[in-house]
Length: 84
Image (tube, rainbow, N blue to C red; front, side, top):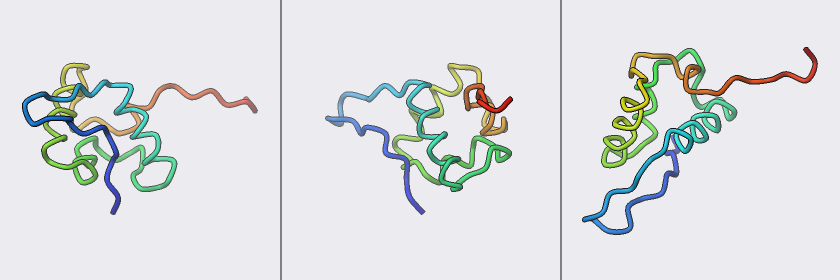
């Protein structure tokens, strides 16, 4: 099991800001590699994020009005298919 490689805080006093775009990029990578599926709930991501970082990720998700029970696919941007 691999973990998401979000930047870690540079010092214990300062906290790192996790943007929703950073989270979405990592989620896309996990879906593209087949590690998680679009239909799984967002809370499954906590298996791939260290607990110290999960607190910050969860706060950003809540700030952007995502619920942990929402599907991972909800985090992924709309996709355009060239063959449509």
